[in-house]
Image 1: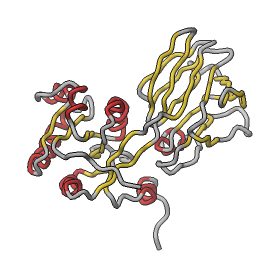
Image 2: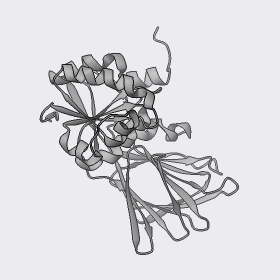
Image 3: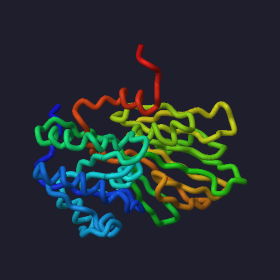
Length: 289
């Protein structure tokens, strides 16, 4: 199978961590490194306003750039992947945050990584995306998610009751604090914290992880990505959260429908990046004797 490569490497589109004007100095340093390699840099309008620079509308940024770059943490990259998804542009993250599962290029690695990109020594990973919609009567509200979709109780005093069907057939009613439907990429996020399994990120599958279930028999479930998952609450309003960034109220009678998107998100990585080494580093697993 032929590895995907960039068509050209002339322009990078940058998005910065929001509400962080102090990141300007770091951005200028990194921009100078791109300039020195002959790669022009565009900055999103919103990020530019934050640091007092000139920028371009986000649609222009995506359409005119050969690849996109987030400067911030995993949340900044997550938002960029979702917003740019329709443009099919590879994205990589420079980690100016903490954990760095997704934004995995460190500040002092940028110059070396640019050299590798210019030599063709990189890879583009195809990561599963969730495509879904909320159906309320005749209306549909569509969305995409990169990490997870969470359906949870609307108030702390109420238990969430969630009926779940797969390909139109009811199979379970979850009772508790809610349910997480995660991609493999999102398996190291909220799903892992709730006791879900870690899934290799290039796998095509859903992870359905109950949150504080009111029954010990409710366990995480891994489902192939070509199934359609349908969820609704039969007796109370619940809240649906998309990647922890957007939320919707699901009324009684409304339905949440989730399936695997036809195309994945593209993440640009170093050729030698090893996912299991990332897990060992970020999760502090064991010591090598």
